[in-house]
Length: 127
Image (cartoon, rainbow, N blue to C red):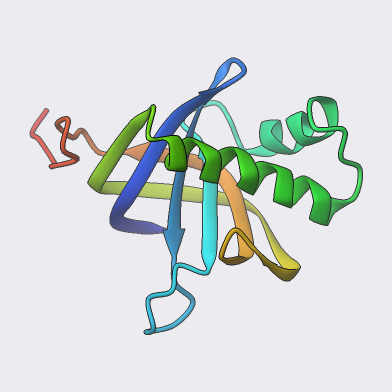
């Protein structure tokens, strides 16, 4: 999956995480939350292990909500890198449909993400 959108990049334990949203239709609601590891060797399963180890969550839906909570919290406090117009490519490893909307999302996708080089405003730069 490749797109250009707002991406929030933040640290979580020893990982760098990227959070963005996508829409399942033309309404542009951002109902799909994409939370991915920014690492060429990660695959997103690290997030699910943290939800168990740090969040104490055992059910898949609870783990998904814990992951979305970390991502939405990072975006809300605006204490981390917020790329307004970042081009990215995500390699989706896992997709979970939530039983009810959470943090304005119906679906959580996790995996690995590659970000194009951008300046501090999220504008694409040349290498």
